[in-house]
Amino acid sequence: MTGRLRIGLVGTGWVAHQHVAGSRHVAADDVEIVAAADPRGDVLDDFATRYDIPHRFRDATTMITSGTVDAIALLTPPAVRAEVLEPAFAQGIHVLIEKPFAQSGADAVTFTEAAEAAHVTLAVSQNFRWFPEYPWVRAQVRRPEAGDVTFLEARTFQDRPQAGGVWRAEETKLEMAIFSVHLIDRLRWIAPTEPVGVRALTRRRRGSTVRGEQWASLLVDFAGGGVGVVTSSWTSRRLPTNTFRVDTTHGSVAVQRSAPMAGTATGVADFDGETPQEVVFSETRSGEHSALSYGSSMREFARAIAEGRDPAHSARDNLQTMGLMEAAYLSAARNGSPVTIEEALHGHVALR
Image 1 (cartoon, one colour):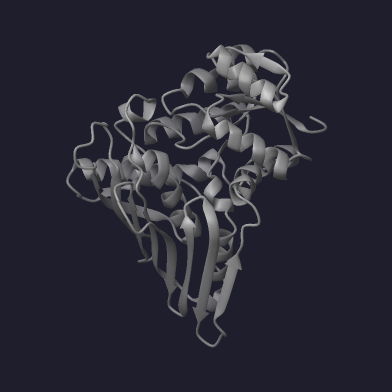
Image 2 (cartoon, rainbow, N blue to C red):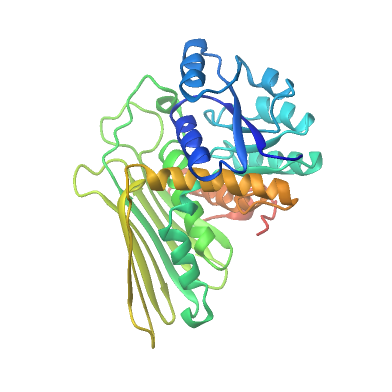
């Protein structure tokens, strides 16, 4: 392959707009969005016309076999996975897949192994990794001077009632699969050792008619004795909070942002023998950090393909995230009993 990677979008809902903005803002030298597929003809036409996308398809398989794309971004609800991935792998088409990667840990293992057998790149768009404050936190705590990580905590509280009548309202796996998966991925990406097991509780908003959870709290065991906590709520009526903290044997680092995907982020690092740092990750215009995160995910995907290497957010890397999320759902179903990552992945060992 020479030149820019030709991308086709499978699905033209809300997140597709984010991928177009991000790709054109950050990854324009690496990718070109040339096609879109959606069974809703009017939505597809409006989307493709708005963004001047030349090729339009009513189904993903036709796009995959058309010869117009080198890779696809799979942006559909999580139930739509195998019927798109199988023809893509058969055609040697690379895939960037939106989270959640799969509906279960077992499916995530199946998709990962199928992509590897087909010698195609499969990556998971965990775009929150590229919000600027989180690489900064990771760099701070991975320094030898920081010591050993002992505790990590991700906390997000927001008022996000889930309306009925849309696909999410019918999902039995809701808040963790849609939102907390970002926090879970961030936790294990920043932690220097692998997660071993998890205990979790989930709840729904009182009076809600949706099927899935809207509040989740996880307690994660990491190899070497570190502990992680994830608490995320869609049921908090007031005082929204979005924070991340890491404690080590030599100090602490913490960041916060006024909203999960918007506003100004700030960070503080304080370690033994060092002058405390205070950092402001300012947002110069609305949506810039969101575009940066989606675009950086796409750029890493494209450059990994061009360079013949695994992307940082490869499917195999993301098995740990899927294992944690699956183990959390199993634990919640067992009233908070501990569940190992190995059990959640059906005995498969997730590798860094």
